[in-house]
Length: 104
Image (cartoon, rainbow, N blue to C red; front, side):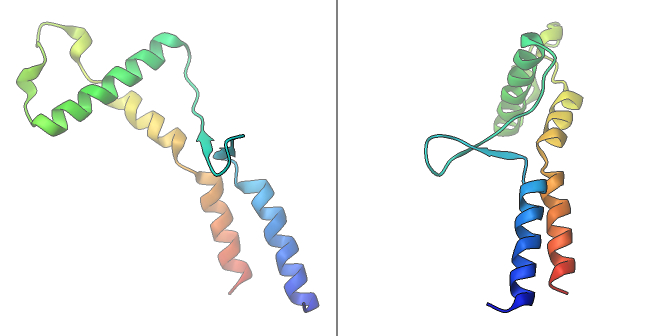
């Protein structure tokens, strides 16, 4: 292997270690976990129920399935979007930007 290729591979290995942080390998072979932070079990429960409600509404396309009198049936779209934002792999995107610079 040429010295330039070896140096490029070393840079990629360093960048991979530094930026590929969203997915963590598990002990089960070729699977990974992605984690996000919640304040407590209540927030986790609200997030899960809001995701389920959103999916039901998307499937049924009908807002009448949930009682308008029940405040617990309101979907917290802000919480869902915040969670998606936390799951978005920004470190990996930054890494891909550096990889693009290396190969230009």
